[in-house]
Image 1 (tube, protein in one colour):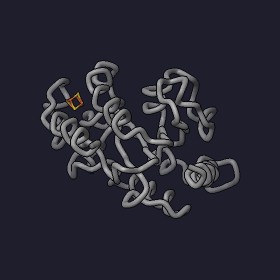
Image 2 (cartoon, rainbow, N blue to C red):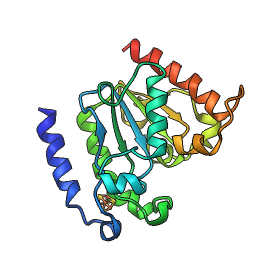
Image 3 (cartoon, rainbow, N blue to C red):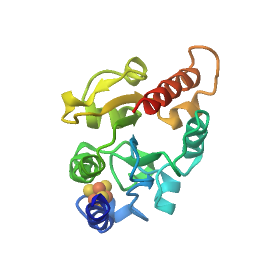
Image 4 (cartoon, rainbow, N blue to C red):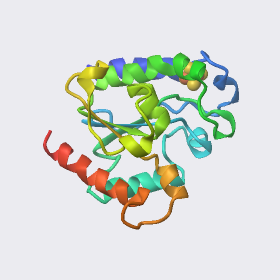
Length: 196
Ligand code: SF4
């Protein structure tokens, strides 16, 4: 009964005051998409619109993420579970502090443990660092599969990808550009998803 267990974690998270971000947040952003998915995307932290609406990836970066998924026939309504490394917005969208990530880790760990996704996508360096540690810059490791077994996640394939907000700042679609690479990566992800 993963729904019950997940809901218990969510209720605990919604009233969490374990770190100072609880004082500046508008809402707690626990997750989006569908829980019974084989595909989980982990981003960094809620931004302005996410904090307002209580949903991850709903601003411009979220719209781009939806387009990226749609380009290979995937959608958050039927294929993907979405969450962030921390659940409350850091002021001015700064990167989460180590102590905030540590405080919030129990919720991310619970989401992964309960849902046990077959594929985890790590969008951006904060998410990569949280799950895979310091393994190099996102430009070098994006698009590569990592075996979850080595990170305590058996039967899970993990791929770092560019964060959509990085793609918004790098608009070129030329061969080799971040957007072009993202489109290669999402096709690879679709293939792996089809083979599950
Ligand atoms: S960021 Fe995480 S640990 Fe901090 S208050 Fe929000 S839910 Fe709790």
